[in-house]
Amino acid sequence: MEETQGVVKHLLLTRFKEDIHPQQIDELIKGYADLVDQIEPMKAFHWGTDVSAENLHQGFTHVFESTFESVEGIAEYVKHPVHVEFADKFLSALDKVVVVDYKPTVLKP
Amino acid sequence: MEETQGVVKHLLLTRFKEDIHPQQIDELIKGYADLVDQIEPMKAFHWGTDVSAENLHQGFTHVFESTFESVEGIAEYVKHPVHVEFADKFLSALDKVVVVDYKPTVLKP
Image (tube, rainbow over all chains, first blue to last red; front, side, top):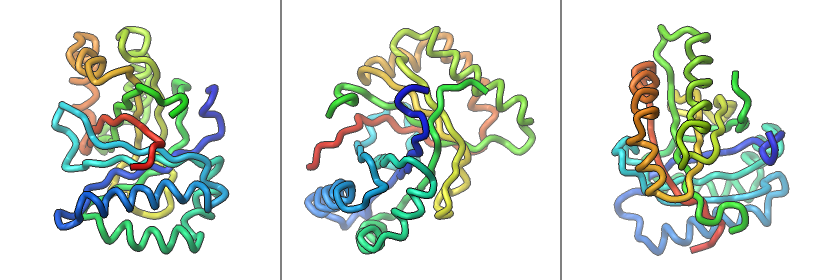
């Protein structure tokens, strides 16, 4: 289990609306990254753009992965006023989003 | 960038078909995990089930995340005979799948 013990990942796959300019996207990503310093239960943030070659991305172009210590931490984050304000802006810039939370494990079932 | 430097994540969100039994799902997950020992460029494997409460999961129930050192490594993995054989079985058990590859970064744009 190593580094992932007890960790819960909050994962978003997104596509931005066509009329959202690259500079606005950059600002939204910066705003997302800035949440780590403002919302205590959010422990880490990583993002990246899709570079897959298999053509199974279903139109998703960006991945956002944040790390928490518990599902309760995610609930606290979701309700946090700073997140609520950011999420309003962020979600309104998307035309496609899926959000899953999971506890990454290497254990075989 | 720490631990994620140079890493490429291969991420699947899936939902299994309704007629796939839990035991078959367990076997498929074990088969997926076993690829790490058989396909050199695949460096790590983690999986988990969705525990989100926001109801934005779009029906996806499982997350599979494997780690590579490069996009070339993913291409090698995708073509590897052991993967091809496994993927045939695995994908045929799914009624929903999205696959994205991304280089996780903490860098702000």
